Image 1: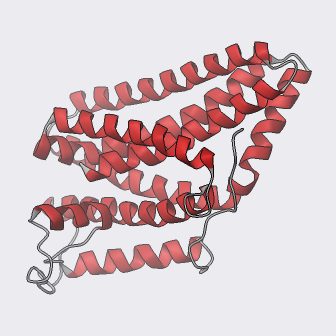
Image 2 (image 1 turned 90 degrees about the vertical axis):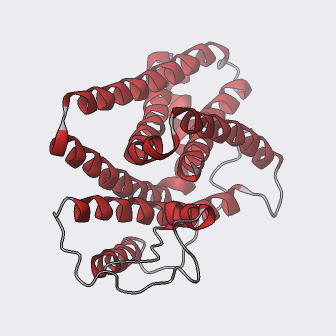
Amino acid sequence: MGQVLFIVWRESVEAILVVGIVFAWLRQHPDGARGLRYMWLGVAVGLAMAVILGLGLLGVNEVLQGNADQLFQTGMVLVAAGLIVQMVVWMRRHGRTLKRELEQGANEAVQNSHYIGLAVLVALAVAREGAEMVVFLYGMGAATLSSGGLVPFVGSALVGFVLALATFWALQLGSRLFSWRNFFRVTEVMLLFLAAALLMSGVDKLLAMGWLPAGIDPLWNTAWLLDDSTRFGGLVSALTGYRAYPALTHLIVYALYWIGVSLLLGWRPLRRFRAVAHAG
């Protein structure tokens, strides 16, 4: 359940940050009191859009049977991995200007009394984070639910959300060690490893269905060092894509993934934008 907890925690912090930036700006603006109602309307609409997406995915899953269902779930795992990488790249490029862009959008809406525009701004931002979370959770949910059940899944999600609230509060206090910059720097690396883990899960499914050749299988055996069938080894595997008995295909895909990520990030050391926002 580590994947579920981490995704809900990380994505919730980002969504809370977006709402916090707009909320803090409206509280400080003389004409922002009316805008607060529209901001919360935007939050509700954004969450509703994410829920609708989730229900749609569940509906598709109910309709599909047999191999079609397996292929759909495999596709969603791979889509989730790709979205995580896309999110990291997007935040690298837009993170430094996120606060300014949100505040400019809120300012234009309030000055022009275009409060529906403010609601749309918040709704799109929340829906984006919520939609990503839904896809991520769906992509990893099939394997998680089959192995652990619904209660641990929901429990992990709730714990992740509570941790997100606590994290946001702690980050707002500000410190050199526990800062927005360090938070995004560390979680960026964790997200990239999680995307690699989801990619490996998709490869496992494709190998099982015979859609990919395994090559040399296993290529090596490191179970003596870390067995991915144990509780701790399984957690490492779920968060990084580690395999104690990898096939040659695992190694090739894993290596190509990190080469592609490095190219997308410009071969620079992993780093996060400076002080993305201090909402308030």
